[in-house]
Amino acid sequence: MNIGKSSLLLIFLWSGAVSAQQYQANWNSIDSRPIPQWYNDAKFGIFIHWGVYSVPSWAPTENVGVYGKYAEWYWYRLKEKSDSSNPFWVFHQKTYGSRVRYQDFAKDFTAAMFDPDQWAELFKQAGAKYVVLTSKHHDGFCLWPSAQSWNWNSMDIGPHQDLAGALTNAVRKKGLHMGFYYSLYEWFNPLYHKNVSQYVDQHMIPQMKDLVTRYKPDILWTDGEWEHTSDVWKSTQFLAWLYNESPVKKNVVVNDRWGSETRSAHGGFYTAEYNYVSGNKERGDSVSHHKWEECQAIGGSFGYNRHETLKDYSTPGQLIATLVRTVSNGGNLLLDIGPTADGRIPVIMQQRLMAMGNWLKVNGDAIYSSRPWWNNPNKRDSSQLYTIRGKNLYLICLQWPSKEIQVRGLTSNENPSVTLLGLDKKVNARYHNGVLLIDIPKVTPGMIAAPYAFVFKITNAFQ
Image (cartoon, rainbow, N blue to C red; front, side, top):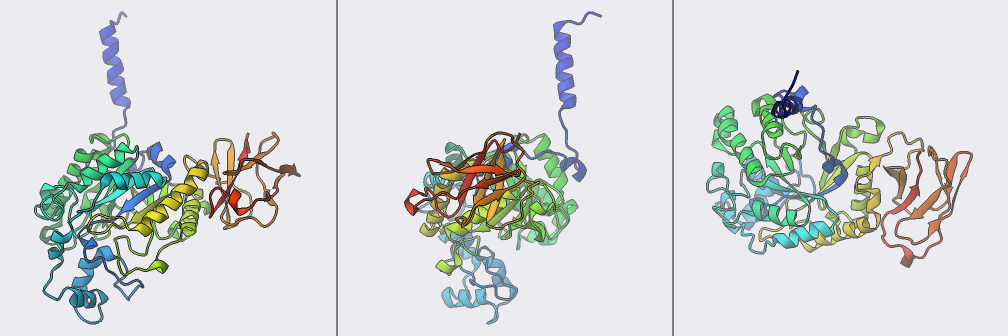
């Protein structure tokens, strides 16, 4: 049979269209989509909680009963109980008076000192590969000119700026991936309380589609899912659109917060919060090799809390240890900052980010594009962790080793080549009865290029 070139082209195009994955609006289909590789390679991102709650910027620094210590929950906590047992109400009445409403704070959310280029440069210097901004928290206030949130967005009131758009442009100019946090529910939206189905159809889904089509984010990080199942939120319908039709269908990454039943079960990567051992067990203990992400703030609150003191902030060493533990167990770290209402990133947060960036400049080979050593036969040691890149093994010590290191389970037949990253000389090492023995190099403090954690690179550790 003689087939012309035009017919062959049509057949090729048709077969390509048929073979292209089309995701259906059910979890079996949605969950079959692989997580884009860029996200698994990135390892470290910056979370940003910024909004009207940044004006009062207050929460207890210790958990107080049911009230918690998240400053971004200020409005909700005010409404819970207006008496002396509620620390939020006591602070509010003393500082602003009982007649001041949360909505009145919007005019003071000015972002007057917001410099998106300075923010983006800081994130790059910190070694982050992606950024996730709270486009809308549970109070419903949007950081972009959302038609669904008239007069309750950053263009209509307060900054009178498209904050999401400005930061997106700045972050992408630095070569980083940009994403958005989005709360499915809103505490006090009348439509939400009157008719959830109408809220989803007329408010939530149009708003999310606007966010996606307008800014083309690489991450959509949803939250506030717990009040209803994914069927009520129509999550699989939205995700089918996101994966099949949206302008970000190839590269977008989502999390697992799409319904009261979906965490660590459905969606994209699984989420943990202030606990790198998601599900109360380390991911390395074969709970699941599914991609996951730890999120936590540098302080105790995600939103800026001016009540916090130095003791409430993690040290650089603690943050780097969290990054290493998370990555070595197959996760990414999404580290949160809380800018002030006028758009400044507190200096202590800048210092912590720069400390992480300085460490990553020396030791990033052990983090970026690495993979966990899932079948690690060595005895678990919380101060010695491992990652793999290709044939190379990275031993990350959270404390300077006091004695010879023994590493089992290597499969290379080549002579070992061990280096300490940041130290311009080889480290003595040898095999004995199948065990790699690494001598601890004699160094002075000035020879260590990056403190807090020390990385031994074992070249060609595996065949």
